[in-house]
Length: 569
Image (cartoon, rainbow, N blue to C red; front, top):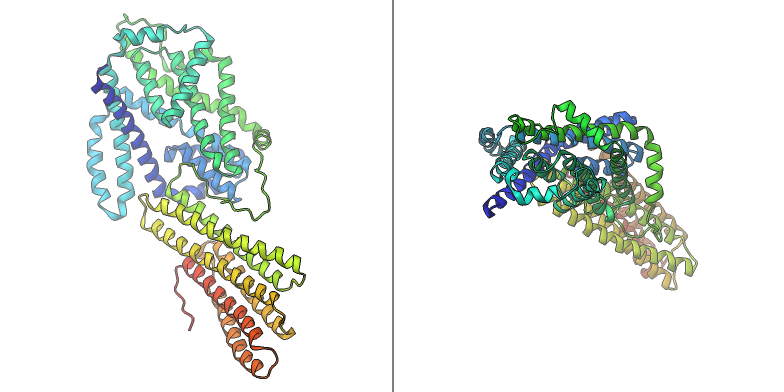
């Protein structure tokens, strides 16, 4: 095999992989939110979940995207792990469409028909409203160009007459069970190495169609691909949260179980598929119909892939609760210290995603961030009424820790969104990311305000003076108003923008401003009347002013969420 043909082979594989990824990404850009709604609405039972997973995966041509989307819903509490497992089972069926597309590409030279698609795609890309459609057409064209080039490269390589390759594969005993296991492991290792089951499937089709690789060993490679692709997702999920790891392990368990039972009926099952397609595995090369017979091999591989996954799903769909128990027993939650330990809950690092899914995960993380800031303010309220030194110091230390966590969360989420923004995004998604970056900046400022309040209380605790009973009453009233504004902010962040009312937040903000102005004027009079010292009056107004400032940050979050602009007069 010449160096030129080798580079043509790996180049066409790269073209195929790029085309499939481009097609998948553009489809998710065009219909990402609708696909999320489909997943949420159509998983009422295990069968609906399975069909939904198959439909979504067949639509976007990416079982990984469907799995990540499903895990995001589990984290958000919109799907149970049982429902997620049924969707992942369906994704295994939906991904078999890829093999049928490839088998069609190997049956006739489709590369000649892709050039009109390239021409139409470039026109659409320069049209702002049809840009994603143009990307989709480019993806399809690249995928079929890659398939056509692979087909021609397979013919040019003339593998059927290559003695070295023929002797290598003939050195394996075709009737040995160890040979089947060896090719199964080889398929898994290759898939893990190239990170694409589609690429390994394409190589398998070339080898089988050229008559080099017997169909039994070719199908063993396909079975190995099923295992290899789950190893990738399990390694990617190692740094993710517990639900992501459980979903990834359920995927591996599902595929591994299928491979085990298939090994018991391996030859009879393949013979049945060959009979169904009309392929004669015993036909010698000297037969005039050998070429036409070999052309059916790609359809045999596709038919096996689909039949195997459909039967495996039909068996295991009845045992989803048992599978859930197994994965929960194997994948246990990591032992955390206190509940305020820093970790991102919804952003699953290491798992391949598209911008649509990334924005969803970032939105859930921001909601978690906002809830954490309100818990921090609740600690400040408790600190206000804590008189015992040891308890005060312990609570103040917790607030300090929360402030450090707040800073880290802002950086982590901002970095994540910055990485997402490097992708090719729609204007709508860009606007969402800009709004979320502003939200996390303001949430970090809320955390800073909470820490400033705690420091003021710590300064008061270290001194010899205390607030009057009336001052305590006013501070607690201001704290209640501030907590109300935080509560309303969290309601808005957890609701759809179309159904929420910003006027509630605006009214609370106005009430806080009016109360601050009233207390400011009263404080001057009380200091002049010697009701308390100037120093204690300063700390008192520091608390009141910081609450008002915190409420301003809350309004900035509301503005970013609602896409409105409100000014305090």
